[in-house]
Image 1 (spheres, one colour):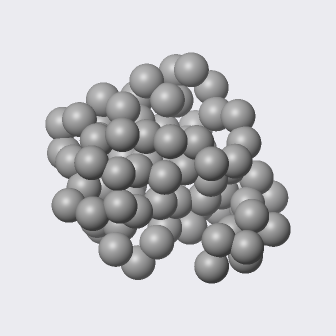
Image 2: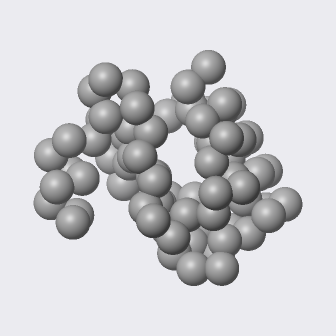
Image 3: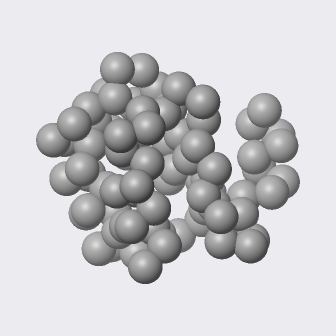
Length: 78
């Protein structure tokens, strides 16, 4: 799956136990600060990720919590 994401993603962000890691792309400092604040308040139980494609759509790994998806969309796609 990593090869597929590497091919199609413009931004790829991985979240593991309150740590946010950029795997691909260059999100802004404000976006990273907001993501860290979001995941510190509501941590993920496992490692998960999301990525943004060229057509500006956000795709989430299936284990990404549905309750956090709207907040991530609001941060990453203003």
